Image 1 (cartoon, rainbow, N blue to C red):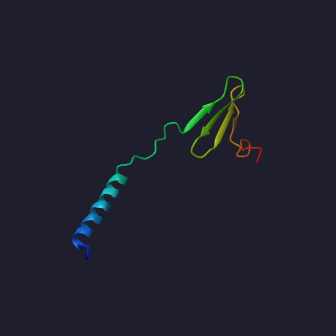
Image 2: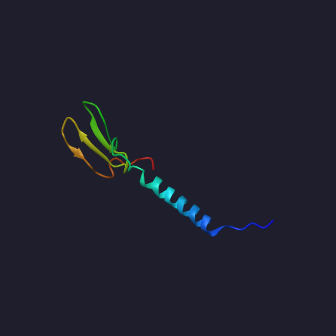
Image 3: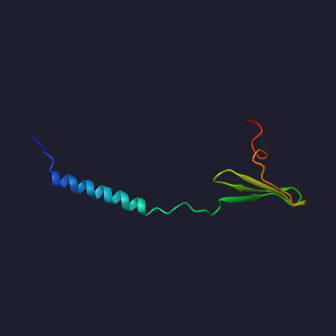
Amino acid sequence: MKSSIHLKSAALGLGIGVLTVLAIAAGEKPQSQIGRYQLGGNQVGPTLMIDTVTGQVWGINSTTAQLRNDPEFFTRKDQ
């Protein structure tokens, strides 16, 4: 039994597959920015704002209103 591929059918199937993949990819929504920045702290200590995408941290002392954005200040010390 000899089987042969019908060229028009193969091209049509490939075209439909490519169009389906493109339609699915075009329908995806970009990532939401809601929840990107998180705040933490209390009334007497520092308040921290964390960028959850980049990991950058900003700190402000709520009693003196001094802003800290020293890149080395908030790095992990156990590395």
